[in-house]
Structure formats: C-alpha cells, structure tokens
Length: 150
Picture (cartoon, rainbow, N blue to C red):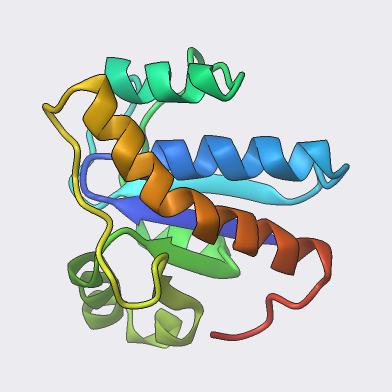
C-alpha cells in the first residue's frame, strides 16, 4: 500500500504528514506501508522548512534527509490513497487526472489545512496539531485494514 500526501511546495504540510505517519506506522510495526508526499508546485530536492523540521523534532522525528518531490502522473498512478491539504489541491488532481478521483480526498474531510509557510515554529506546530488527529485516525485505519474507501 502507498499513501501520498499532497500540498503546494512539499516543504511544510505534506512532509510533516508523511514523516509523522511513517513514524507512527513504524511504532506499530508496519514499515511495509509506503508513505510519500509531493507538491503541485514543488521544486525537486528542496529540504523541509526549518520550522517544519523543528516541529517534527519535537516528536522525535528526524527530517534531515527529507527532499521535496513534484507531483507527477506517475506518482499519482502508483499510489493507493491520496490525501490533499486543501480542496484546491484535491480539485487540481481530479481535474487533471480524473481516473484517480476515487482515491483522492482532503486529509481533514473537506476542511483545508492552513499553509504555515513563512510563519513561526508556533504557527507550524498549530498547523501540525490540526492534522495530527486525522493522521492518527489514518494510522488506525491502516493498522486495522479498514482504509478501503472514503
């Protein structure tokens, strides 16, 4: 199974979601699940933002090896589930790749995750905390094999 998180630049929201879910699944012994992230407007190989890395460090997650990825048709095609940070991201994927609409949803069930780009560590932490319950729920669904449809 491959889970993909999508945002704009792939340096803030989607990397935090990727790194946290991967770490959460690893705690549960589920390292066989592939967790990735990408951005609609990302530049390849950018590092995670300093403030996003600081938030991940608070959870014991090392973000130093993270590198951004631009969303491609090939990447979308290889994923089983795609979670976007905003409805705009979801609509962009569905418009350009309608065959993948049924596996694409917003992470917060129709509510947008605000973009903390340029904000303080506290703002990044607040954004992450809005995502965290959904990420834990996602980990539970993966663990119980109940992540089948939206």
